[in-house]
Image 1 (cartoon, helix red, strand yellow):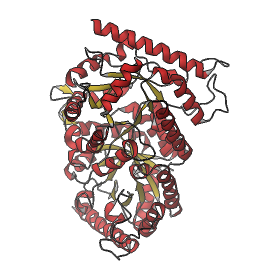
Image 2 (image 1 turned 90 degrees about the vertical axis):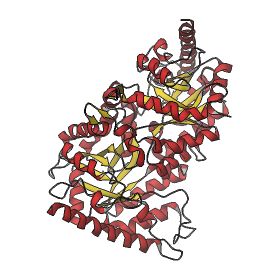
Image 3 (image 1 turned 60 degrees about the vertical axis):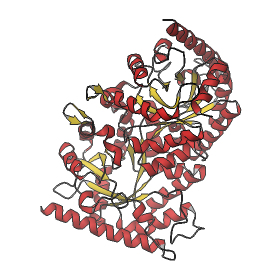
Image 4 (image 1 turned 180 degrees about the vertical axis):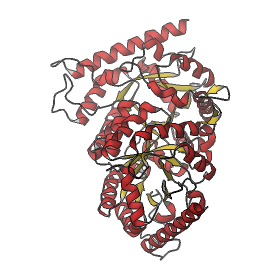
Length: 287
Length: 287
């Protein structure tokens, strides 16, 4: 089954477009409400368990596991396994991309048969089509790809917004994403070749939807990075589909005071975010 | 000591600009001359031992280790440790880059204190300055960074060559690399913020040198990807410094027939490549 269809099914069944970004920061545990003896795996799995009802997928960030070396990568394996046992889709956030033969190895690692394999992976387009082809080839095996188009960070415009041929570079990437994805549109009408568009850039998200009518937009930047629910769903299609919204730190570190239970705090935050996003989406569709 | 100065010292002392790309492909062992029972770690370390005299650094490609999961990453740790025991510098080829807080974790992983830490790391500029700042901050700790500017692959021009503001996007990246690196120029006159320029694009390499007078250029694409020694050294400065040249498959898989010793074949290939590059460099400087 196509990744896009699996995602849409889960989204409809659970009535949520929220994704849990599993980003265990380096200076935690030690945050308010998280017992100091909580292991990395335990911490991530408790958060996943708490949020599972309210999210369609998890998006573990490789960087935070790699920073912890072999033990971190072993935790990554456990975290992905646990999320799957809870029926969640998994998106490896690695932003990989390299020459073809190397990207083929990355694809094997993150959307293939390796220890670290997930249902989808984020990739970086700077090196062009041949760097992304090995990832896109995995779509035939039911996997998904999210290509960085317009990222959520403050300096994303430095190269992405350079005007070339009358449009910003990111629009050229978006147009290519639509092309790469056109062969992989599922019964949901959405493609398994998606795009990352920061929720912090809602105007660009609207424009991106015009360029990529079938792409699933993964929108980071909601919550800790400052985007509102309205901004986060800016790329939604008229049918209400086509966007999933990631929140990481605002779920992982929802507990703000000592003694507050971090699991209960994450659960409350996830429920509130789900509702907030559903309301924003409903309002957007009505207009 | 600055990374750039360590690299230049090693280059002068050993009279070589060759870098061994440690890229254990997924379909090997099984290549001619490599015994089927050769473990991943053993294979990589034998190649490193064979080439150590002729190379200034190793550049292990993360993808090929990640594709093998936890065992692969454990091998990565062993390989880096072994290369250091042979006095070689290490460049983690990961092409990482993400929002600031995430790039900080990647920097910890690959040029910090983690299991996977090397002397330098390759990074991807698509997300802009704030995505690279955490890596560049590590230069103060003697680490190096190589920013993708113009990559060696066939489709590298798809976005890198888009013309914006009268010049290709990669030139805008090159200009920024010069800026980022200007605070980190060592006694060698070279900066620890370097650039990746494919040896397959020698004209661009010459232009890149004008834009980045102090950058160390890491040139992949020599050997298996088709660039000649003359093309590989195109970005050298008049003083003969400023370029290191990577070869991966042509060293790792130098043995072409069954029964040929892969270690001896790698050693012969490395010696020949070192000499070829030194001749090409000498010819370039004379002109």
